[in-house]
Image (cartoon, rainbow, N blue to C red; front, side, top):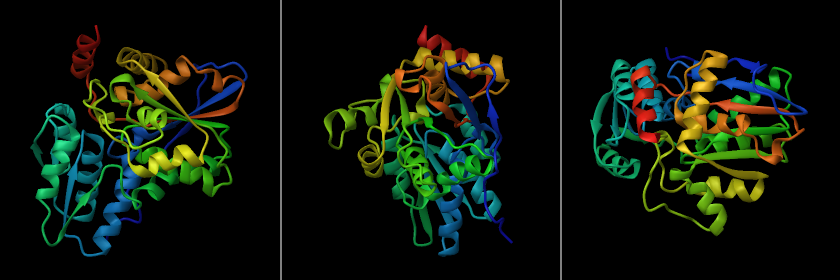
Length: 308
């Protein structure tokens, strides 16, 4: 018998360390998910859906977290998983996928190249679990907002990181479901992976020439079309940070809150350590601490060397 859902209800904590004048900062600790990130929500929902439709093999393309979540889901559902990762995927993330029983192949320099290889592995009874561009994913991510509301907190702004845009789509859906479609969303990217920022600036589909960031799990050259649609239907504020700001935020968060997260998550945390004007005196600020399994002391040293 498969579990009812493949994600956990994660802690919602008010931070006493992060101070923004006139505001209360709430941390949704998605690092506590069984696969280490918010991806457990949408990926788990997608895997359960496709399993119910007869899928007997999952294929994932991932910079890290989506592949880990797919591997975990496959283990829970007793369905084999293969994950294709780009060459910059952390060894710690690859090890986590393998620990959950997935076969892992390294192919290509970017997620897009890994994804093309993943598509070639699909057979008659298998399905690709897309890391961000699948409508089945987004209601899974929206459960994060359900939990926040159930905890008695109504956010006045949400801060989150953006890679391909799946989390943005899910959070926007969750806010809409609770009558909060006017709640501002601060969508944070690192400067070397700013595909959403480019799409907003050009008001058109936009693809980066290359990815240049240590936050490899944000490394989508182009966001999904639904993420672009969210920027037109919701109050979305694009915010860019440097790799160093993202990494410094990870280290500061570790010291203050005793939770280890990756630079993709540090990007969102940067926006509350160095807040944009839109967050001043805004009431309840919800930060999606999206997590990340591919973190270790040695990996931090590698990242620090890259940004120094």
